[in-house]
Image (cartoon, rainbow over all chains, first blue to last red):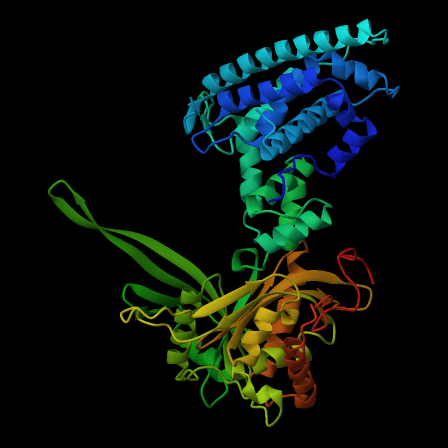
Length: 110
Length: 463
């Protein structure tokens, strides 16, 4: 079965330009903590239909990205004038979420 | 615990706000831990103040959650609903009158993703246009199917075995001016005073009827009646074999036509005077109404100042209506909507199976004189005993739609009662359609009654 994807063409471009997958893989702590928080969001926001909508998970997770200095450090290292912070945080959250979906599918999380 | 299907707004807000705070805290801890490790390895760490978007993230998350959870907001506004939400929904409702195919066309023209269901596409259009009323209204008028409330509708009722003379008609109708006749149960037609305009008689009349309901209030029983008065303009041309009615609906049109025929001593044609009987070729397997429509498209709607741009809907009669008592499933009619429908397999299959094409809607370019060109939606439908011709206003002046309507009525009347014109060309069309159905190749480009070039960018331009 094809894996569910969240990012559209524009999001994928932003992800690749700012090497957000590299940020996410840069420290095992990041994966561990983001996956734990995604489980937390899923639990808090679940509905009678089941899991919350993907956009709810990603936008809530963007709050975590906003406070995460490791992401800020990663983006500043790209030396880009005026990076689009809002879009980058949502995209970083989506990178974490897509990775989470893959891990669930592969059975590597939890 | 899962969120209930309906949740009060403040509960959702509190829950998401708390969660956002917990996530921010988790983010802070993650950042600190990771950066400490980086620093301990001698790596430089960069920090600067950056803009915060917490409220926007929470709002987006909540909007997405509304797909699955209904959020009950306080009804604290003059008309209960929060004005911004109300305005946005009104704009969405206006767009919802467009069919899925039309919405897809609009989205594609706006360079938006045109996939998904109507509601998803409507959301994208409203977002892209910032819920701007004027822009949305223009989009709707440019793309909707013609309808009587937003256009001019004439119905042509054929007369059996005779034509009408204007001099006799004006005298007889004048004799009954300001009198009414009953046309059915609690239905009357009131004649106005006839007027002569060159070779035409015009009578304005009113169809009066009452909607009646029995009511019961405790032990008290009564009937309530609500009056309805619907105007109809009747037009009779000298030597014509049709009574033309201009009105919004079919019932007032039919009542007016019946009343005028009675007064003038005329009898309705049983059915429609379609004389298009093919003598050879693939066309012989088609229903006579389909042959008439194809001939109309080829000979009348695509020549001399009118050009077909897009056939947007095709309505077929597929069989007799069953009673339902024998449990046999039965489909009486099928309506296709889309673009360039005579190039679509499902529509063509019905044609060659001998099903009757009884209604078409099109976008046409109308060129009343060199240097002027207008794009307008039109439709022609064949009913049991009359033909409806409809021109929508689109985004043009009403006079332009009126001029096109006059021309269309003339051409449809000319096509009715006449033998088949250019049968050889129509047979070639029928043969091409049969070949297309036999071929396994997908249809990449419309060829039947389609313009040579895409026309999307040349609306309203002077030619």
